[in-house]
Image 1 (cartoon, one colour):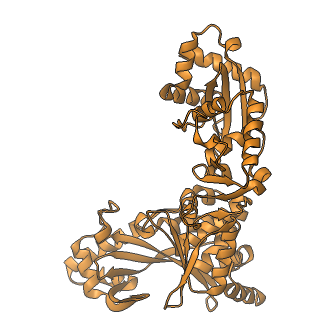
Image 2 (cartoon, one colour; image 1 turned 135 degrees about the vertical axis):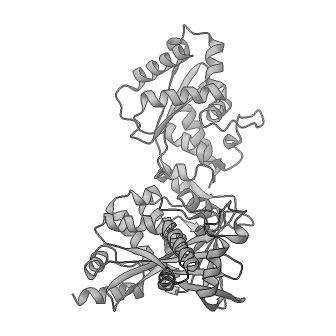
Image 3 (cartoon, one colour; image 1 turned 180 degrees about the horizontal axis):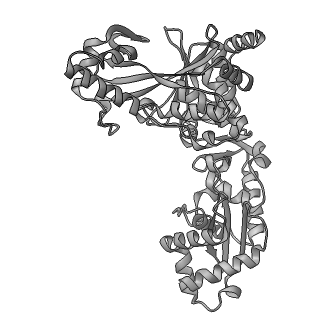
Length: 479
């Protein structure tokens, strides 16, 4: 096996030369380069899934620098050894849509793409191309004998994203080369839930803006349907415009009695946001941080995130010349504990403190009747730490430490992002919430440290919202 891998590596190197690694599909004749090896042994090693994966891993380690986002995948058809330098970058639309279904406008274009690929790879039949695609993309489909995989059936206008990725790389094309030939992405249901006339804009800014909007006022359920709720009509139009950059997305919207409008976005958009780091389910319980693609991005992308953050989750406070936003951390998920495998951070003694010393109020949720809510202000808990009652003081101190040890990871990362832009942002808990169902959460605030930090934010990231932008511009005019 090791001798075979060394020979394959040498053959690929000699064929590929010193060419810079880029999306590319190449091949060489097995008989010429691996003649000293038993043919059946070679076939078994490359086609058998476990050994193939091992070979691909070793080849990738030897031929591709760990600093670049590529992998090498292989296949064997008609005594030709094929290799695919495949981009794994999160900034590649073909990777994001790999598991989605593309639909072409005409069968003629699909046939042309298949024929062009066969010509490039010197494959004599659709069946041979199908065998290669099933190996090199790791799909391993089982379909009628006319072709090896259903993606290459010439009487159907559809194709899986991963297959399309391979065919485009094999013919030195990308999605924008064939965009006008794509009718839509996604199967949908009753002509709903698809992206019609898809577009593939520069990915980083759009990904950042949509993530910032949805992580604040969006909810991704288990079926991957995405719901976005907003009261401000101008802000709603901004988010709709961002969504439209993906194409003509099929979605519905509904206005609620409380004045909020909810956009019901299809699962294909939900899967896209999940790919970008949005959690499925209760965000506060899952307590996720910022995706690496945003936290480690360049300054322009970080500013894009802050431009969306204040309109969605914060405000500019003119009397203090500061920006502020809030996040929530859960200490006890109660009825959702089992569903999320959540271990409560606090005990019944701490819940008793919140219940006894907090302020009771009511909270409404749209059409749902008001529910009891008890709020323990952070300053009140600080005073309880100095209580003359030793047991109460000790329990209050423990609760204090637990809260500080469990900040919202998202806010922690957002503050780090601000710091990287030279903006000072302290963050701290402001209130502990006890809901009637027993759930306990903590509301945290992050606020620019000084007027100077407020100015730094304003100059770098004006809010992407008409009303809040005007407030900040008026502030800058007074400087």
